[in-house]
Length: 133
Image 1 (cartoon, helix red, strand yellow):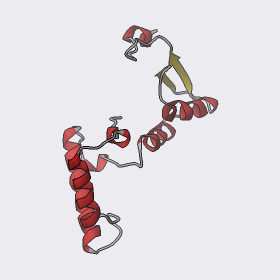
Image 2: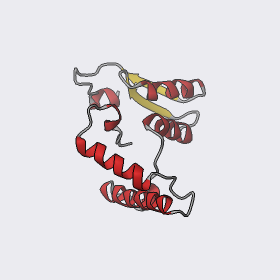
Image 3: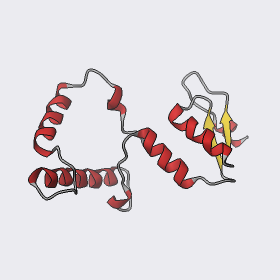
Image 4: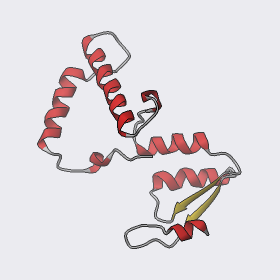
């Protein structure tokens, strides 16, 4: 997973962000794909263009492989609960965010093996040797 929500908790935003969001909300702030009026069509176009650009950036085979979720917590829940099944094994760090640890704890009760690596460097890095063990 690539985290693209860094701007969610930053403040203040650069002035260009405020201007761009204001323009978008005034001209394209409708539900994409839900109606045929001009703003909805414009919103759908932005969504599809963004999907194509992200697919290129991430070297995805097809832009249809790119999905948008509500936020990182939602994306983690979709991925973890959609892919992991009893008997699977997950290795995580002891400093992982609650958006990861809580669904993993639930999945652990459902039979997914979860290994939490304790030693992390001061910068939060886990050594490859610890993962091998």
